Image (tube, rainbow, N blue to C red):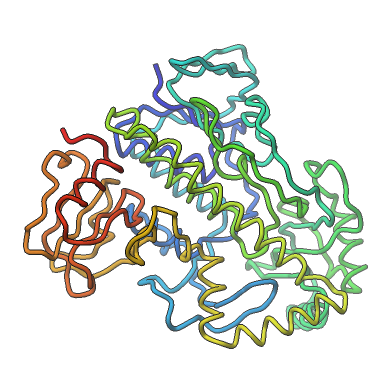
Length: 475
């Protein structure tokens, strides 16, 4: 029997598969498309995702093919300097096209031994107390212990599970594509600057060799956004908004997206789970969608692996919904707010000017930036130290960097007590580093495999309680 079937081979599914393979879980990824998509809707990684890639040894690969950006705020079309007081050793995002992100994650998953099967469309599923059975379009049936739907906003898995997807339908639609423009670059830049004085949903970004990434408001809200716009429709909208079509021709790809905002009522149904766009959709403001999905996978992967390996505490799998559903809800809320700020009417314009003034304060700028980049995420792990439930930034240790010690996806106890603490009984799941370095200003800290702080202190009994809560019974 397969341990886990992952439906969907995009960034979320590939990240999840890799996290599972770190623990020798047998994973099969079923992807409907026969070839990777060339469309680049997601344009990069925010700070928390950059940290995750470093924690798994993937960052150098991303840096080799990506540009860095350091802009604070970037909320509702408001750009501010990077906040100087942001608590991270990686104060930047990466401009990585989605196909490149998928390629790097695909290579990582394959290196770890993931079984990726393309051209496999799931059309049915059922589950019982022992596992999940999926039916493919060609009549094949597969059986697994667990299943995770990472198959996008129109998720087949979510529909087959009967999970509600409440929210709001699209009120506006935007055209997006990559195509060649014959207009002089200086003229393009001048026109874009003028249009964006009032229309922040418009953009023309050079990609090199005369190719541009173009974003322009659509004329109507169409029901079927799966149908790509024609080149003529694209040129017509450019002319209507900018007064010129810039000589647009030879599109690489064209698409359209709406501002629908919906969230799955449940992220878990028995032995089946939802992650990424299958669990939540929202406007792309702030570039949070792809990041939110791979961070779902990062949270779920080690927990599902723990269950399969037999050491998970009784409620560990339920903590996936408990932790990630509120995070998703907050992203939906901030993208709703940003869409309001992007409006062209007097009210949104005045509100944007007010918020821009507030973001000149360092504390406000940092708060907004940490919200969009997910650095500010804090899971509710109960009362305790201010670090509890937060991710720990990369710190220098006597024997290297913290993130270099997290490559295996295991728990980690950073111990500055001189070795008075121990993880005896959990050594197969938790590493013990009796060398925390000067940057760690607490006696000891216990990190989960996803880098979030599960315990802080120096009391042996409370450490044992935390180990049992997150890593199960001692061996």
